[in-house]
Length: 486
Image 1 (tube, rainbow, N blue to C red):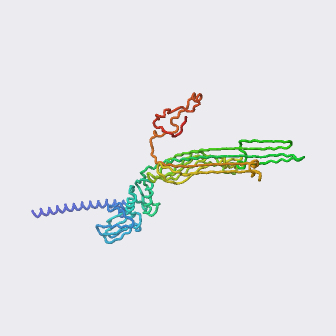
Image 2 (spheres, rainbow, N blue to C red):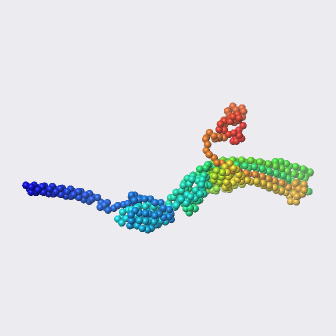
Image 3 (cartoon, rainbow, N blue to C red):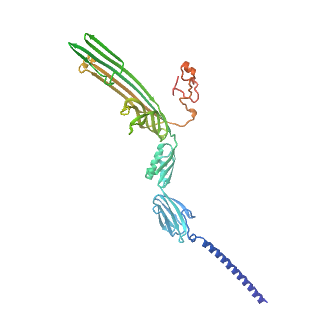
């Protein structure tokens, strides 16, 4: 009984074990079939290709290496392979399986891979080789202590950023960086100037001219009858400077005695002229930029004829012009390149273009000055000055007779011209800041036209405004400034 029970239990265990084995085999077979089906449906290359880009794996690190400097890499395990993508930028020296020296050879970017004996990555380094800017930063702190300059490297270039007190310090920083990097074009200056950068330049052009012309011409005429022969003698003493008598007194004295006659013609003229020129152009510009100003116009100038006979026209400017480029060196120093000109049309030296209905091209009378100077804010200096005196005098007459004392005046003419000029050009720069519009005054502020009744009865062109000078209105200029119309 016991043996039969033991045999039955053995069979039961065997059956159960066999069924389990069959079920396991079927399950594994079905899994292998499904696995085989999925593998066969996917591309074969997907199982074989693995791509590890630099800087994307868990073993990636970044390293900034100074040019011509070295770094020591200590690895936790032995390395079998070391790969540097660009040996010209970084040179790798494997000292031991766990220690490698990296030397920066050239400015640029590269990476290095370290592999163990199984081909797995130990370390991936993204390396940036650049100039060691700590030396340049120390030079700025030493030589420009009042500047706040930050330096950065972009490839083989140096970028300057921050604030400096004035443009002079900015230029000095650029020069120091250029000496460090070795080339001026490899320095990018992005420094901002903390001081006031806007400059207003006031230019005063003052000129006085005095001219004097004197003319005294005497001509004699004599008629003599000798028998049946008549003799006519006459002097013709011209006024060679002006070409002819300009006016004034013109008289003739005639004396007759019988058939003879004597005539004396006298021309006397004197002219005195005085010219006052005052121009005060004002112009504002930011430091380092050029500003121009012109108050005048343009006049046409014929430059020639085209193939159809038409006159080619080109316009030339004239008037009061000013151009200047300021550079604020510091709060007390302003460097300026100034060019100013005062010109006006004149008939002296005019050109007549023949063949085009005698087209006359007027000439220009020009006072021009251009220079570079350095002044403090509010300081003035004479930019240019001129004192000129021209004297012309001609004596025209009969040879020999004109040199006789006293009586020689009857045989000569005198033409005298004198011109005196004094010109001064003053410049005054100011550091300026913007203000409210309410604080600015225009020449037209406060003007009111007169009524018809005041114009007709009183002959006034403007009405009275701001009649009480003791109580000037707010925002108005005080003192002898601007234009005053009574």
